Image (cartoon, rainbow, N blue to C red; front, side):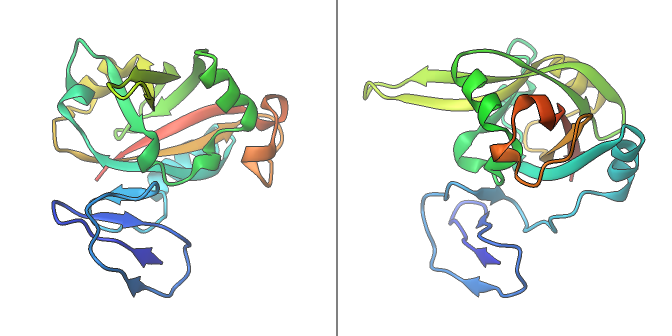
Length: 194
């Protein structure tokens, strides 16, 4: 596993899940696959796996680990942001799902919160923000029922969380990024409070 550290806080880049660890020089910018906080073991807690198994879920992938920002916990925003630069496993979405998000379509999802409650009314969106440079900065976000998730877990600014994805239904795929929406199943998430 190759790790990178930032001066303010820690960010770790996951290049592979091998056993070798090589320390790199300090870097002021996080890499595309940055994990904020201590290096987590890439293992979903067993109590979440049990719930996922009862749903006949599969293909668990760590999407992001991040500290919650004020915008994630503000009632009026009603969203959990997933900055594209911080996503650990980009293959949590199929090519078709990425295409739908780029076309401003919402993807319905289910979410298991840290108290193992299931929320059925969460949607994943892509949010494009114009910049002064005439470029666009994009991020994914979970919304719709996010305020209920936030309140039920008493989430606060600075809380460290992991968001995992998994699939329910349809046939298992070896490569999620090459699968189609018809054989991939329903996109679901698990929110782990660290």
